[in-house]
Length: 311
Image (tube, rainbow, N blue to C red; front, side, top):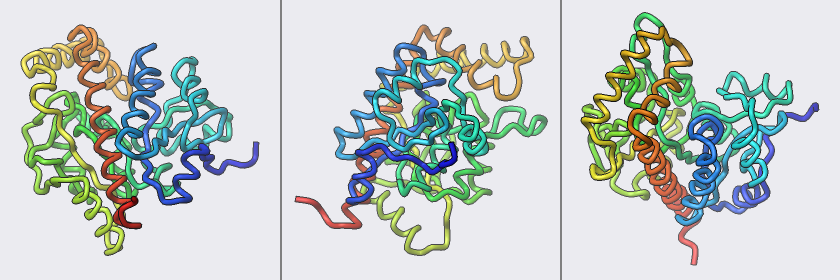
């Protein structure tokens, strides 16, 4: 294989050619984030949520070394069901392509591919961030530095509460990544509606977010990402007492078992799933479906801003 250009699904290619709204979706939630067989069902539901709100879904992943923006259902099924799918951050994309790998893209990789493909809006569950004890380990997600240099709007429910939320917000400020709450001035905590941290800015509608994207592009002074933090309603969040108890237990297990580095996040997420008897998984699914809907409405507003309302 010698041609490593990004491939486009037929529907996504046509949408980009004609100026229709497109929403990028990651594939790590399919291969690594959700258990089988829920992962494939939910992946299809996420795409349908984007369609229902008027946009075209572009799930991004790698099939046999080909980087694809707009996986078809057979490709999506492959990433959801086969073993050995690599988890790809930005640094891995070229190496994985050259070795013919199957791979699922992280938030960082999906953001980079989407921006390169001309897709301006991306929906995910929660961002990576600064890990607890990062002052000793220097453990920080590549999501942050990628968003500092990638002009994409990412709709998410904040960062996972198992991370150091305050330190993550400080790093985002230092890196120059814009953060706005959707109809809130409080940063969401993924499973929780409120992480306990204030935000300087909020947006009240998809149209206002589209204006923010347009202002960034037209001013041409800032080339980083825009995080749209979309909290769950309080009646849909994980019970806060259950959350805090489960997190404390998980952190104690980390210390006991000596789990460090890349193994920390999957370890804690698995602990949440088992300790909450699936409640955290149900919340996770609600998060991504709501974010897919909002991202699609932002993409529609952005497309209308460029071309005018369609009949």
